[in-house]
Length: 437
Image (tube, rainbow, N blue to C red; front, side):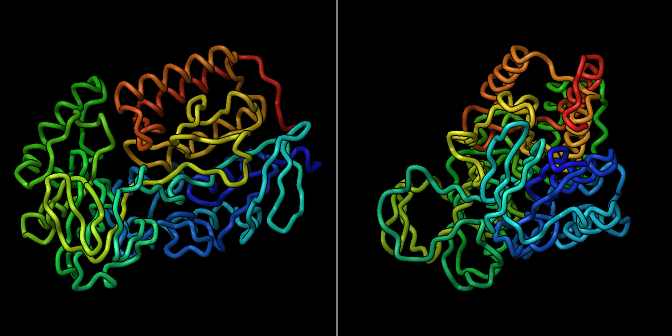
């Protein structure tokens, strides 16, 4: 088999390794390039590639049964919500079990990826060039920090860092800490720092729904809501049960959500409300300006602050693509079903989505879909139909979530799976020419 019949996979995180597995078990030759020294990507604490956002106390927010791959269950002795070290070990075991590591070049960065006649030319950091018939991108989307835009006015004399660089609470002992944001990382960091700080303040610009990990003694994402129930009914039932369980955010000094449950990515935290109730975390509104050794908020109050932790999300970045080739302004990259690029029939993105649930099973299904396409077992719809579906999907997302960068890749787990399976079935009946001989 010539190098022209091989596939390139960029990244050996949770999406990259399941892409490798789908290619390997179907006899498709591939090389995978990973900048770090082991598989697992974002889940490898202090990963040598510098791209992990894991902190020492991190646990998953999706239960293990919802996060695991379909044919490789997590160990039964794992808790419902394992620690990041257990998740990283699970990914390593997955790569060992399916004998993927021989196909992965560790400590190897891709410097450039360019379209070439009949495929893609991949230039590595050492300057060597390699040709491939197709390219699968699985470099993740939680590694390039996004800072407040525009920056807050004023100057701050204390320490500033992004949640991407947060590792543990100890450096904030006896300090006044300001955590900015209302996502999962913001909640975790506010809770952790509040155990050692003089005071932890939580600056919240907009209200979000806070949901627990458990409801009625079982993980929330495994509640037995009937499959026949319409999504709007499921949302109403969950919203009612969660409100009974957690109460009104306003009673804790937090803004009321300005949207219905699941109309924005919810915040999962079983602890933040307790820390607020105990006085260890103090809610504040948005920042008005930085003020030397303190911060002034939009309600006119001022607090002396030693350190600010911005939990303001991540940018969607592809450092190996020229910006005029592939870019994602405002984190928006139009793709057919979040995988196929409409301009390049041999370019695919794996795991580039944000589900209400875990990415891993979706990346697994996406990888199987791409493998079928490479072998000619699936045919794409017409370019016109793909463009139309991309436009319709983006419009649905805008109506439901708005245009914030946080929600440009949002999908609902079960509807996405069902729609993808139906598309794979439809595509099997279309004429298709294999990309891989």
